[in-house]
Length: 124
Image 1: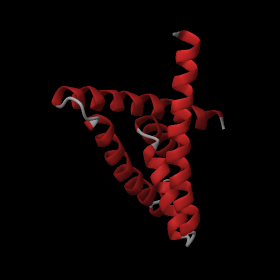
Image 2: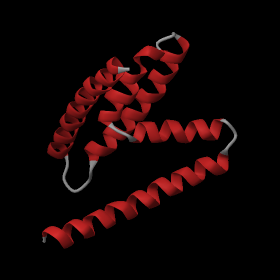
Image 3: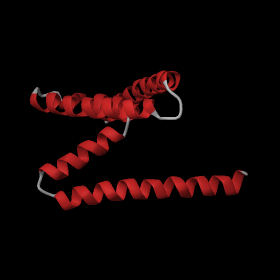
């Protein structure tokens, strides 16, 4: 188990650095629109689908902590969210999938709003 945590940590560092690089490039290419974040989310989702299928079909599940949780988790958690949603949908749990999407978006927006308000109230 100790090695699994190290795989996740190493992958997370690599994914986070890649995300930072894409965001810097995106900021240089455009202003006013989060093109870096959009790009990261789209690329991360594509990579999540590709890697999840390849690892499952080729017996590479031992690399999942490094690549899926680590690299892609550091790159974008949107990819994990998308895979979880699609998995629920494909299992025939459309209501749960839609509820998960709605709850994730709405509760996350509410949480960021609450965190901003608390931070501003404490540190302003």
